[in-house]
Length: 104
Image 1 (spheres, rainbow, N blue to C red):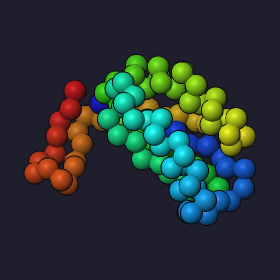
Image 2 (cartoon, rainbow, N blue to C red; image 1 turned 45 degrees about the horizontal axis):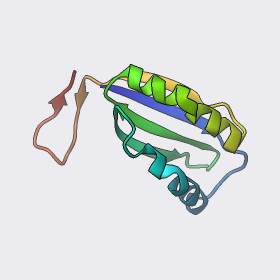
Image 3 (cartoon, helix red, strand yellow; image 1 turned 135 degrees about the horizontal axis):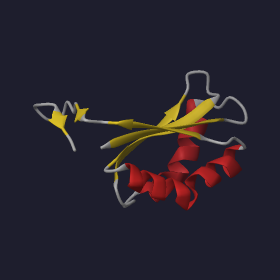
Image 4 (cartoon, rainbow, N blue to C red; image 1 turned 90 degrees about the horizontal axis):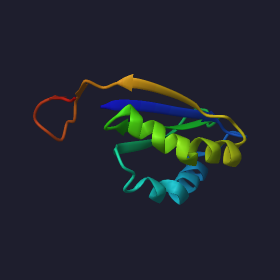
């Protein structure tokens, strides 16, 4: 498993309510994406940085999706080039199941 963190600057400080509405408008585009296990939308405490944490089956799946236009869409919508950071995720703790899960 791969965890990718995408972050970008917002054009102005936004409230939680504003960002919730913006992110809700695009949330559906993440349904059924090949290789995407889970996505969390992010907003910094000061409202100036947005982003997402993505759990992927593989880095290749993540790179295919980002190359398909997501990063360009973010840059166009928010006026900021997003940064992407990749991390191996060899163990995941999910408190809805009994034990940590070793993956991959």
